[in-house]
Image (cartoon, rainbow over all chains, first blue to last red; front, side, top):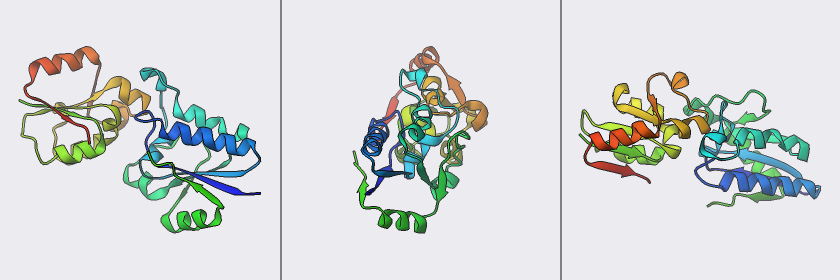
Length: 119
Length: 91
């Protein structure tokens, strides 16, 4: 089974990058791929707690993330350095593992396919 | 008195060396993520505003951040009437 890594590098709401990457990750998982997601740099804002997308007429990102386990996307990682620098308050109901840069390097090299989809 | 509209963290960076004491600031869109850095560059909490709906959507609230004031659209419009020029920082 191929292992896919989707890297999300943009914050939610300002662009469709994060949502589109997640939709692609869910599709990959439906086709029996082993899927992981890494939130790096501004992408880490996706897991900030107390989001309310309805305030600007959009889907709430943390609700979309909560649906990932239903699609067998259960490996979620976030850049620990960005979390610390910006003191992001992680949504407590999400299971996202903070990892440092060396672990991110190892994660990337362990995957067969890495999709960054830079906007 | 200028009104600086900061649309992104990079926008704040560009703005941070180009404002004068007494200027007002509105952080909107992804700019709301830069609220801590805005205070770090010396902007007075009373001059710093977050656009409420944009902050709420992103999980950034005045209570959580301490001092910046959340404003709604009518208050935003009021600020644009009080200040001149209005400078957009959208990097």
